[in-house]
Image (cartoon, rainbow, N blue to C red; front, side, top):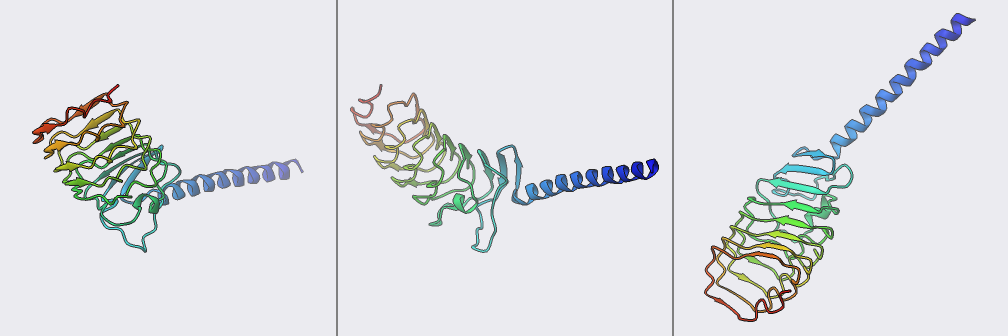
Length: 211
C-alpha cells in the first residue's frame, strides 16, 4: 500500500507540473498574439514598423494589456478619417513617437482617443499644416515636438486646449508669422523654439500673457 501511495503521489506531482507548464505556455502564446507581428512589446512599451501604413477593415488588432509608450518606424498614414489608435485598442498612451514617418497630413481627430498623452514627437516629417482641432482632445499634453517639417501657418486655436504644454519645438519649418493669440492659453510654456523658420513678423502681444 505504501508503494502504491508513493506512485500515486508521483503521478499527481507530474500532472501538476504539466498543468503549470501548459498555463505558462498559454500565457506566452496569448502575449505573442496580442502583440502585433510588426511590433516588439515589453512592459507597456512597443516599437513597431509600418503599424499605420496599410490598414484594412479585415485586419485584427490589439495589444497585450495597457500600452503607455509607442514608437512607430516607417510610413504612417494619419490622413484617413478614422481613429486608428482606437482600432488597435490603444487608448492609454502617455508617450507617442511618430518622428521620421513621412507624415504629410493629419486628420483633425487622429488623436481623439489618446486622452492621456503627455509627450508627442512628430519631428522630421513633411507636415505642411495643422488643423485647429488636431490636439484639442489631448489636454494633458506637456511636450510637443514638430521640428523639421514644412509647416507654413499655425491656426490661433491649435494649442488653445493644451494649457499644460511646457515644451514646444517648431524649429526648422516654414512659418512666416505668428498670430497674437496662438500661445495665449499656454501659460505653462517655458520652452518654445521657433528657430530656422521664415518669420518676418511677431505681433507685440504674442507673449503678453506669458507668466
